[in-house]
Amino acid sequence: MKRKKIVVLGGGTAGWLTALMVQRHITDKNAAIDVVVIESSKIPTIGVGEGTTGLFSILLKQLGLNEFEFLRETNATIKLGIRHRDWKKTGSYYDGPIDNPHFSENLPKSVQTTDFLYRFAISEGNKLSDLHLFQYLMNENKVHFVEKEGELLLLGSALSAYHFDNHLVAKYLKKKSKGVSVIDTKISSVKRNNQTGNIEALIDESGHAIEGDFFFDCSGFHRKLIGQELGVKWKSYQDTLPVNRAMTFSLSHENNEISPFTQAWAQKNGWMWQIPTYDRIGAGYVYDDRFTTPDKAQQEIEQTLGKSIQPLADIKINSGRIEQTWKSNCLAIGLSSSFMEPLEATSIHSTIVMVQLFLRDNFNEKLDFSAAEIEQYNSLVARKVDDYRDFINMHYVSERRDSEFWRAVSQDYILDTTKERLKLWSKEMPSISHFPPLLSGLAHIETQLYYPVLDGLGLLDANLARQELINDPKLRSMARQYSSFLSHDNREACNAAYGHKAFLDKLHA
Image (cartoon, rainbow, N blue to C red):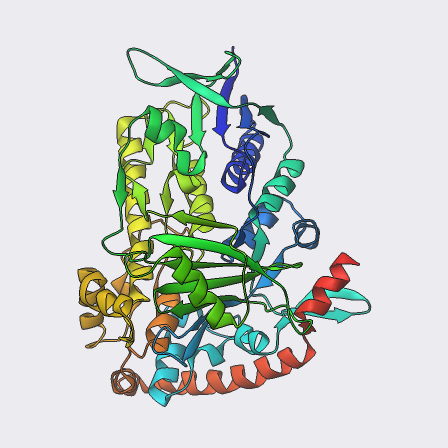
């Protein structure tokens, strides 16, 4: 019997993550399926600083990859959260640490999904982020590791995320792939079945046909298969997410420090990211070219930073998603599937979740899928990406009116969904019940991500939080005791923790 073949078009981060995850699943299932990645060395890769969520560190363990080796070989750094500067108003900032204080072995499981610690902090006028070990570490440029007898050990159970150059990550994942074939070529055309419309083979520049039974389109913005060949339309978010252009550049580390967090710094016409890798800071300004020009955007950044920059690229962006991420025997992953401004590190996170969803709910050894399966998958993914859009939109509920951009944002870009949620949350505190189940246990956006943003923007009512806890005195008492315990415990842990730069230097040494 002829072996089945899965073809991954594109060898970037999305392509190699897909290939490794699929190959590991095939190996576990002992399935007679080959995996082939098609990438071209003729297509240049640009090392862009990118951040992940904690899901990436979980995936490394699932793939059997060593975290320290990964950090060393990809020039990656530890990401403990995101610092949002000037979003509420100029001169303000709030942090979003990614550890969850509710998930602790010291707390009964019955309260781990109630966000009661956040409600208590709000009722007392305290910062939510102070409940997090990662907040203390962020403040001192430390990471969640300690050294004992010359060995680096994890401090606590919380998992961090990472910052890295994505071309180095793709190179590392390629090196770690086992059983995955690689073909270095450029695809010029596609052969399809006249009756079913399925893709049968990809034809390269020399006319060689690379046959396959199922195809992952990881060709990025080209959308070579899902868009150009299968004709699936793009659903734009341009009317709800205002920025439409991105200028990328690099910065040097200063003061011999490396921040363990992403910085998202609101500007007059958009916002600037700073993502620290081991040897540099990957930076960029995503802005709205209806209110400024590339030259003026560069001037604005140079004035903000107090130094000149050398732009690496300045590109038009069109936030949105493909209307059908899976059509026929082709599934689009990564930038082929969706793209949004990198405010909450949704890109790589989405890649992992989409492959996990496919492997968990749809994979079979025959690679034969029903129309109902495909429709269900597309529905879940569409809702997932729309939820990302809604979450990013919430960040723009700002007090700022100091530029034409921010005035336009407040008048024209706040979603009805955002307004409806804020109306609901003016009457009751955000609850897990406000987020209908979507991915049956796979990572998704819920209260733990919304609370820091809502609190940081001043959108939650302390009196409402206080009243809800008064109605449950037992929970309020537990919140008070555990908040006090966390404050002491986190401070002690932070004192023992390794500095971020020293930690990375030790790994590289």
